[in-house]
Image (cartoon, rainbow, N blue to C red; front, side):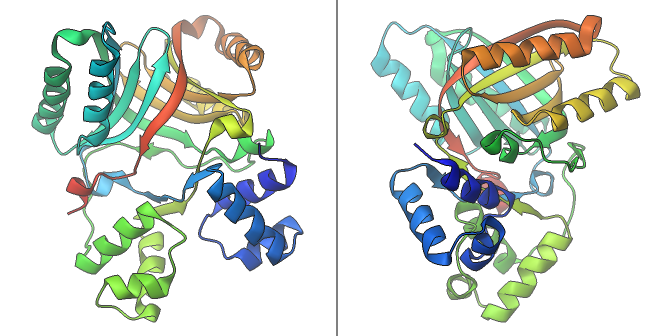
Length: 325
């Protein structure tokens, strides 16, 4: 399990996983040797599962959909085949196995409505007679995607600017830019000299290209993925149906999710439920306390809600490779 020293390092990596060890050491009050040792140890023990760069999806796709699947699980071999198919689907960018009213959740990006329909048909077609039911939601606005606070149990004071899913935006990216993005998305701690070897650019040009893409909002940041069990946290997928989505209600929602460190993701959506959250809680009791607080905060505006316990995360990439070409 990660101790408090590990969590200080993880918090710093979550803020910017591309930071050099020397800067992490300075910010945490540790020596470079301790930081290096701790990071290597957490990688070996798979506390740290990866270092993805956050890529602006709107540059590569029209939108993002989330689907929950309830599976008839009479044959576990067949269930594993379904998991593998969805995990390997070239449009799926995130996926988890669940416990509750649904067995699988995934999100996938789409270029247009036809692409959305085709991806949905692909997955439903493969599940076939093993599908009991499914529910699809389309993301409109992303209000929060930040896991830092849950690590230390403290909210970040900064309220992030909402990301609006308004269709594919245009920007000029050449082949070398795309290579840089793909490599950073796989491992944000890759060195510039190694990126230079994969492109036609010098190390200095790599540095300038990265800074340009950060300034343009192509690269939104650098984070890490972790094993929540080793941080003694549990993940829950929560869907809310909130009435009267006025500007006042949306402002109330945005402020609330940013002041609760354990709400690590929140989006407004189109579907049966119009708000989707991911909550990282310490245990069942803590999760119940968070849900009760949500109910009290929104009062009569909250018409209904539903949640699932996340057993394990199976996939996370910001932009599937097919969409970054």
